[in-house]
Length: 415
Ligand SMILES: Cc1ncc(COP(=O)(O)O)c(C=O)c1O
Image (cartoon, rainbow, N blue to C red; front, side):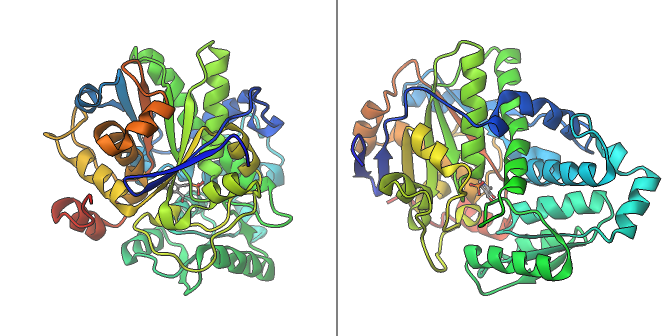
């Protein structure tokens, strides 16, 4: 591809991309889709907007106007943003079955006694593959609806992640497969048993449910836009989004870019973050092949981002619209975890808990601002005294023993 530049700075690989001048987003990612989503989420137990934190010390040290972190570790008491997607997809699927209006559906509609009886009579059950957070979200939604649920996990799944899902009453099946192969297995099992597959990525002939899941993530964007106003914060100029399969990143890019355009704000730069060993979106953008993949079982502490194949309904959008892809060694995430938890070094009004996949956003922002080795990247990305950096802490400590080793015992240090 022309108009791309690749650099390796401080062991971080960076692919700078020239986004297409005019942003065209498909119908299913248009802002009008987000109203019904938020209306439904507001009906869920423990719904409240997750905090948008400001990190003034890091901003001052890094010479930028502001650093903001949306803290999804506080979402629904589940420690991650993921249930936003699965709960909305499940609500839409069931609304269709029960003949309810998808524009206005709320949890109470789905759980009315006669609807519960219908779901039981039709033996509605859910199934998915997950590296932890998505499965927990599906299991949580299934429990709210009293429906059985079957969750498949790939090789190397942390026992604490497995337990968190099992505690919600789901059947949990651990495998020795890669994430991609686990997704294929879950689909086969769902077909064999008549379960509804609620997968957060696409498969051949399976794109509509992933689209609903991505729409579900829009509540984060809706809340961010409201919080920027309420908290009188400056508009983000650089937005950092983690990618496993890229569903969250693609959706958030679309919703935030359009929301900012609607309120006549300049378009921010979007920076996509992946583990260095499993950088499928990076490779897809670089090669121009949206199905580029990283085969086999890969090791990274960022379990939620350990996915080998991009989601087909958003990868073309990321390729056309993202400004930069960063392939991050594990130490980037570990740095973010420690910074989030360190009230002196850091950073926020108060320390917060950030897990491996969530912390790579703060880690990447901090290293971009702090390290002399990153000067060239700062220049290319136009990071200066007016810049406002926004990242999402997509998870808290999902595996507390891993968090302990990294944050308290200093595992995975900076080089
Ligand atoms: C904590 C966390 N952050 C980010 C992501 C990335 O989401 P996606 O797979 O949609 O790219 C995941 C995916 O599971 C996750 O668990």
